[in-house]
Length: 91
Image (cartoon, rainbow, N blue to C red):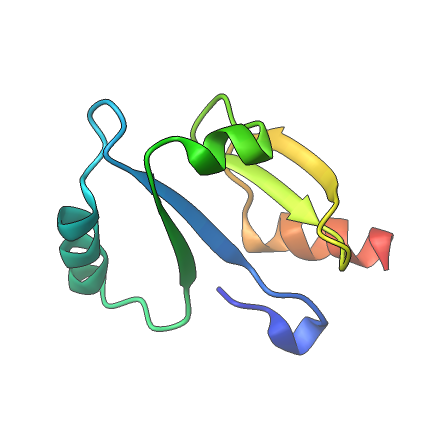
């Protein structure tokens, strides 16, 4: 699902060990078993990423500009077409 050829990259932030979420080891095993080769994720233990990006629901889409500033924070699942459409408007 990476779109670096479109001038941006999709990165999934995963917070482990919160509530009923998998711990780090369990998540890595689960993810590996999915055999997704084109998805990158950033693993954070606990709720640090949730606070940093203002995440209150799962999933949440957070789009950052090149300066690391949030340009979109929207709960819900985005399909790749939606990401492409949004990114074409902010370029």
